[in-house]
Length: 133
Image (cartoon, rainbow, N blue to C red; front, side, top):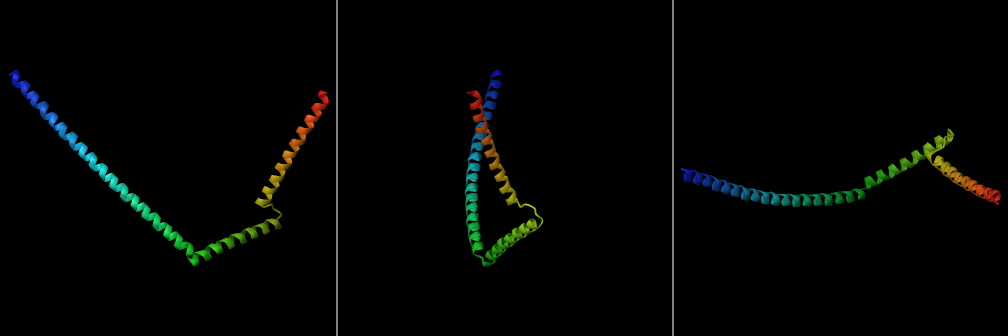
């Protein structure tokens, strides 16, 4: 009876090992298949992306040649220029400084501040030299 039980246990273990081996080989096969599919999808995606980029460049190039779009771009530039000039005229009439004027004044103030600090340093150095002697 013990022999029969041991044989039965061994058969169960052998069946388990066989099933596990089958499962392991099946798992590896599925992994290889998924890896191959992933590579194929990546190649397709890259080809599609490259095709899309090529088409986009072609469309962009054609749009730049389009006389209507050229005209619209020129109109946009002219309108922007006229608006800036109009805003400057209004600001001048109201005696309000433009952003450009404020930036220019700010640069001048910074420049004067640096010169003032330099004069103060020179004055301190001359003053300390005279009192230190």
